[in-house]
Length: 338
Image 1 (cartoon, rainbow, N blue to C red):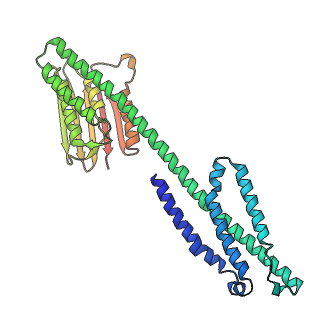
Image 2: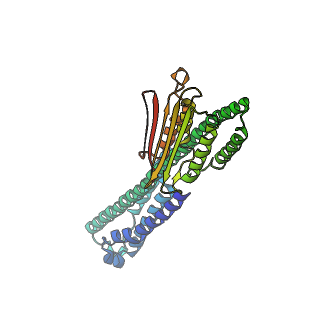
Image 3: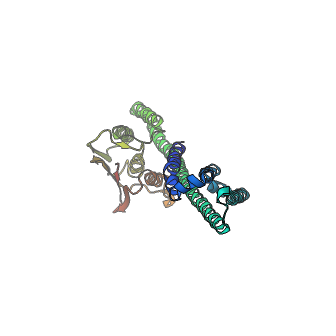
């Protein structure tokens, strides 16, 4: 819609430029004074013909017919205009000039050259304009298709992340219920807050980082309820802009993985989560002991989906690394928000 409005406005400017500037300048290259005196009817006819020809091309839009493979229509149109142009070359000379056959021949030859010159000029200009508009339309269409594809992919990645997260969280609550823990009620409260967050921001492209951080705190507190003294959790957060926009749930997958594979009720282990925002650059990292391994060494969809989301939302503006050394798993994300 916006493109059509802009195109119509630009088309109007181009038409005005042609009608009020370009063609008057081209017509002025003719011996207008002599034509006005001796051949005023021909001059008026050629001017009408030029503008008629231009608006025929602009109305029909040959490039669009070409794109739609309507070749017969194009051939018929071009032949009709050529016939009309040829008939115009037969425009009669004024009767008072019919004295010398050589003069008549010369004048007819000049007329023919003038008419075909205008035909070529108008045809070339009009088709070039339409080709330019069609090119921009095709470029914009490709961008729109790519944008819709990106939106669809983002929606898919969110749909995959949310059930994955909910499944793991419900497992945590289930374990608390089975153990009869007095922390179960608190877990349900925190879980309801997390669900509210997910529901409210499902359609949001970005949210203030303050809300994302609060969501992460709720998640860490919820997970901590099931942990004993063997697992220590360090959450370090520093921001210089509480309202900086970030995609919702872009960090939770890394934190979720740290709790899923880095906690133990029998061995001492530690999970470190660092979130720092300074001058529009988000620096995020997690570190955890590897207590559990993925079954059959099959990679989960979480981190892969987050990487794809980042590629769609911040192409060329992020650096995501995951490393494993000495049985410790590290994640480091640097993201330029602006």
